[in-house]
Amino acid sequence: MYPHSPQMALAGLLVAAMAAGCEQDMADQPRYEPLEASDFFANGMASRPLVEGTVARGHLRTDTAFFEGTADGEPVAEFPLSTVAEKLGVEGNESQQLEHVLTRGQQRFDIFCAPCHDRVGSGNGMAVQRGFPAPPSLELTRLREAPVGHFYDVITRGFGRMPSYASQVPPADRWAIVAYVRALQLSQHAAADDLPAEDRDKLPKGDAAP
Amino acid sequence: MPQVFHPSMNTISRVTIFGAVLIVAGLLAVVFTIVRSPYITEVNVVREQPVPFSHQHHVGDVGLDCRYCHTSVEDSSFAGIPPTATCMNCHSQLFADSEMLEPVRESYRTGTPLEWTRVSDVPDFVYFNHSVHVRKGVACVTCHGDVAKMPLMWREHTLFMQWCLDCHWHPEQYVGSPQAVFASGSSGDRQRVAEDLSAVVEVESQTSCYTCHR
Image 1 (spheres, chains in turn yellow, red):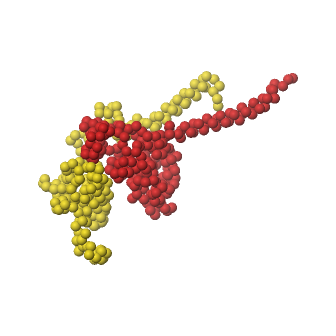
Image 2: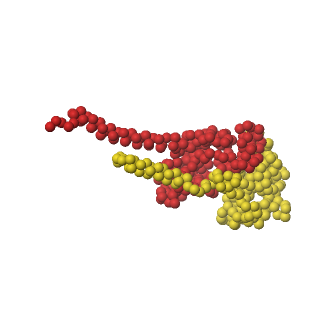
Image 3: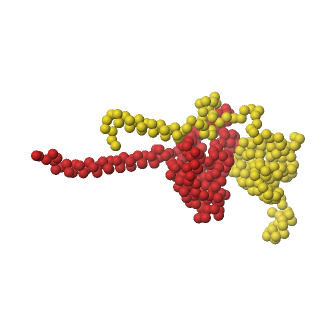
């Protein structure tokens, strides 16, 4: 148990030192974690940017309608539902796809857009309440008449004081948000006659068009 | 022949024998206490950061979702630390002249990233993956604590293997609704998955060594 000689004591110390060394190496192995600092690269970052002019395998963006929201330089008017559903991994028929895309869009809108646009799109989110210049309400006629590609373009490249959200929101999610923006616009301008009969009956009388 | 030992040796030998046991036990207790003290575990110790970022303000007061900044938490092992550009989404306009935020603006101007000090880190031989925990209904607050009440960031739990196993042995006590993963509030407020886990979400106890080590 106890060291009886200087040799034993030395051996004990060596084992202890080696054990400590092992712990260190195992817990902090010679590999980089995401975003770790690095002495090796000139800018001190272990995470490397894509080399300019290269495309990651499977990431070639030839579908400009989907990735840019434009066709022949004009914003697309038709919502690319099948591509969006495919990218989001949704199966089923068109209405099931649309329901999933809208749910996803609502969730992403609440995460990324609501801080300024607020949850119904009127443009009075928390950042605005704290002094950020207010964005226009999404219910404005010119925005209700704008093609879907316009909203996709604004999310992708920014508009006015709104910065680009391209790095935070991937393309399929941007389209899901666009779909939800359309739903928000419709929600504020739907006529009572658009509802199915059983839902229309639930409306308070005389308050059909708020 | 005279007695070799004086009668008092009876007492001395007893004290020595029991004393040795007490000393060993005492030393073990000291080591045990130190290992579990904040000095080693860093639990509840606020880290020095380049900017005094407040989760309490951004999550608690403003109501930002975790994913606004930690964008890869649902898809990747790493939750993601936001680039300075994400800060500037708002701070190009809000507190744009604040002295406190000068390191953020400088980072944005020069393209040099802010060097944050990591708060939650597991040893490299643990292959932790955020996306699977989030997908299965382990709320952020379960491991990170209620960051909406943390003005500056600290580590809420030891991240010891024993702590991981508390949940891996009894996930039903910790896993909640996948819809409430990103909600703030104490983990006790969250609705627990009932005893029959499989009826609600696909959660099973994962205690194979290879689940975390490989």
